Image (cartoon, rainbow, N blue to C red; front, side):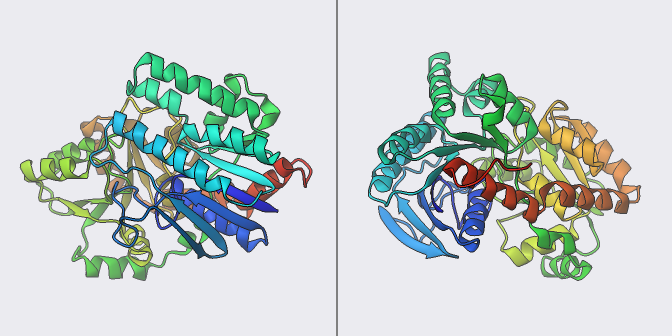
Length: 412
């Protein structure tokens, strides 16, 4: 089976959609399929193209059996709503032109956002007379409406594009049961929507205590109680709640808050922490794999934070990572969201109201006095049951084969 993937994010990006698309493409290639990805140059979450790719308009490279076809996209920094629209539109145009010069595949896998990729998906599907699968990682119209990011007329346009994307797709796939239900509620036939959940990194279930010890030694962390947030540092993450909770705990030198990663809100958060003179907060950049494993092994509690206005369907990939690594979690989120549901269902931690630093601080104090091993065990059990690579990636392959017309309906 020849699979063409359209995705704005790909390796060497290690967070979010880029990570999802990379492991899916590489699994398909390892299984013997011919896989090609049309993408742009890496930029996320820093919103900056690294020196190795800077100034390039187009490039073809290969990694782990996957041909990576890159084309230009405008990368804004700082990011605004209008600039982000231009960013996504520039990639939709360049990726369409780039894909037109490629060989006809058996099936297209189109990763949204950006929702605008529905336009080349429909066009290429008709030109090549092949089906496409529309993979929904985020419901952009819903998120834009919830956050008030765009005017009403723009959201109405997005909803029309979304409806067309679903109508013409052979199959629509998405990450979580809540997102699937939301898509079906939009009028998409139930049998047309498949659940393609994220997969866990199976190696994280075997973290060694020595990895945490080495990480603490390397970063001079001693035996402090480590409370960690890792990943994108954006506006939606609402990391002010972490700073405010750290301020409430500033007199306890035995607790250290780590904020690891970068993003559009990094500079502001760092400035605010400095202004607040928070000596118990430390920032680290995105870590290489070995150090990231060490971070997870060393962390006593991991945090998931979101602004209260963030859509209830949002599901950050760090949830899967934390649970796979057996990390106790405190989620400062809207209690009606998918994140809260998973934390409560797994028993891997606690949920507190979004943007409530006192609640976060109180939960930390309580969990610190408990046996954290029971949370760790429940976290690993839940992750293995739901997100093992064998289950998730096997279902991905069967779903694409069904869409391409080369297999029977996949079993969930």
